[in-house]
Image 1 (cartoon, helix red, strand yellow):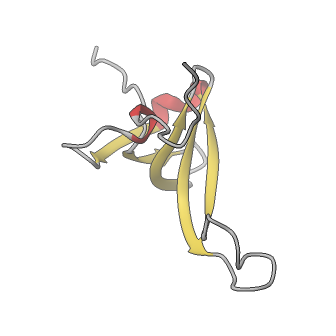
Image 2: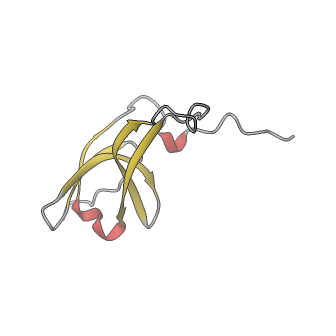
Length: 97
């Protein structure tokens, strides 16, 4: 039997559901119980509520629980020579010595 696929942040996957529906996108978050798959990104509208926002994009995510991981098809990985997004430390955190 082949080894099951273990989802990782920054992998591109297709989710071939038993209903025949296919969703695809980049894995955005991984947990022991579920992953999120980013299926779309769009610009936030430019208005009075978003003009001072640091985050300028709206990310559309779907949740895929572990019992569906066997339906995932690995396509590719981005950032081969860079650390994955979940391995990058936040350099803006205060450091107390």
